Length: 67
Image (cartoon, rainbow, N blue to C red; front, side, top):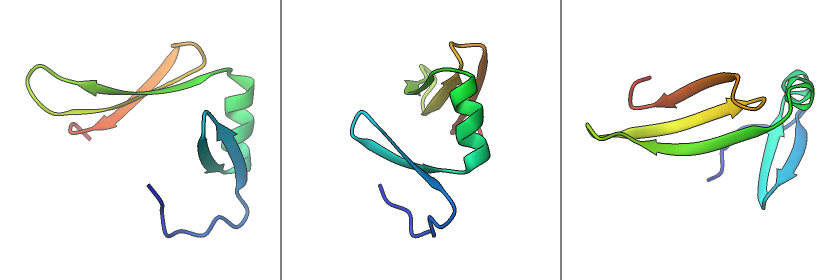
């Protein structure tokens, strides 16, 4: 997937063959809080979405059909 947005002022981060461009403040936050995991969740009632976990499972937010 590619976005047609400017990456000026963003920092490049590569992990597991995935390249991200992050705001400097977000990158510092993620570095302080440890790991980031992104998983796709399917729901028995239908639909699904991505679950983003930051810092070993303490803080989570999801975005998918329910957003």
